[in-house]
Length: 128
Ligand code: MN
Image (cartoon, rainbow, N blue to C red; front, side, top):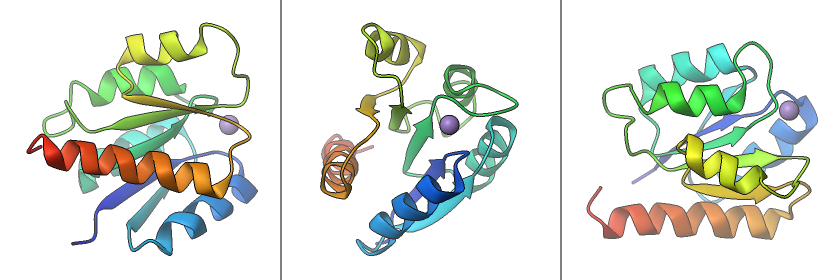
């Protein structure tokens, strides 16, 4: 089955690289370039995983994950926070806001694929 992955990223180049890297693994990709769009698409598509850039326009990433957690069917969807800053405390802030994992930019395509596939396997294993 083709798991749905929602990529939230406001940089067009990063969006292209990320979605290409995941499409070739067989996932069904959805894109959102700001926080409002992310919430709309998430509510409509009920993705199996969300890759969430925390620095995005309109509604910032941490607020997006907080709101997703209150939406029916999205309470437990794995959300991987992505941030360019990777400062001490970023990871904790992301996890506290409801993110399931964390990926610091810049990351390799290999690393991206590993984190995404591991988290989807993990969720499947828990029967979720
Ligand atoms: Mn950004």
